[in-house]
Length: 223
Length: 236
Image (cartoon, rainbow over all chains, first blue to last red; front, side, top):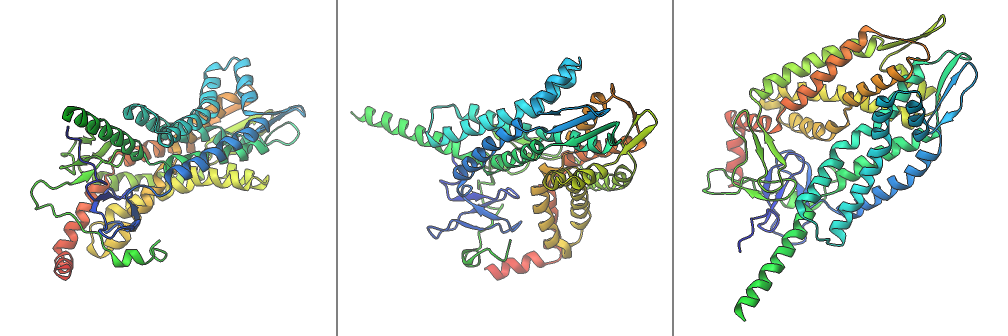
């Protein structure tokens, strides 16, 4: 059976900066060159993609612990007020009856980072352990992880607005907490992790498997 | 970038594909590496990867002109949205205003440098940079002499694009508005309207911008001034 033609196996590289297709260097062991059009460094596949994605994902997962344990924000009203964590802040909104806003904040600052990390781990495992997952499903995970990432910064923007807005000394004051620094780092690190992941690896493995199936079928036919 | 490029880059200059050759591969999907014989979508349409469904090229009508106009209006709107207050919060007789920058300032003063710089970058610098780069790309691609800086601007834009988070910031404003409304009185200030307009224009500019059109334009300019021909002759 004919498999669809793919760039790397046909000797082509794509520049990820401007998406120009060029002939790969003929000299063996050449790992990278500069794109003739935009001048970005280009490779056949992103160099060390899985390793870098793993490293950034694990960093993000570890940082998620202080981000959720330490308080992100303190609202002091008439001298009273306790530091609240991300989950605590969401619960407070829910208890105040603002369940719509609570849902938005919950999705942006609890569900999205966790989903992103889980998605990245799944993607890395698919490539590393060569799991039997339909590549379209894996691509769906990749696209969702890619699209939702930026919305986690919502909570931090809100904190920066409130810190400036509610600043009346003893009457009312909003102060940021140490957890917010950790949380900001989680968001940035996971955004870089998604950047580092090369989805073409998923299809490389799929093609290898299909090629193995094909050659097996051919062998059986011959017998 | 260019300085640390190593020797292999100088030894090897990758070959451009000649469009004249019959049935030549024109493009590979950047997400699944499928080779395609077609590089561009027809005007007003999108080219999707037939296998993984990634959007390979979105060819908007009059992309360069629209993006130039949108980025200019975005730059103009940036001035009021960065200087005018967005929200005002008043409690008893006290009041405080929030602008794009004084939140960052307050965080910085409280010692949260890292957090403040992330907020500053994503809500002010990246959107401003996007507008500036887009304006430069769209206006500059008309001159062959600016080909190099435009190519560099395109590369920067590619990296900067996902860090502009005006829409997320907008949602942050809404959440802050609702969250604090039971504590004191929240008022929407004129700066917020400018901010919303800037956010909409920023999204519109991102959608209407098409790098392929600019690359084609640059190549046309280079060919018109004879620079392209000289290069080709030198290569032969």
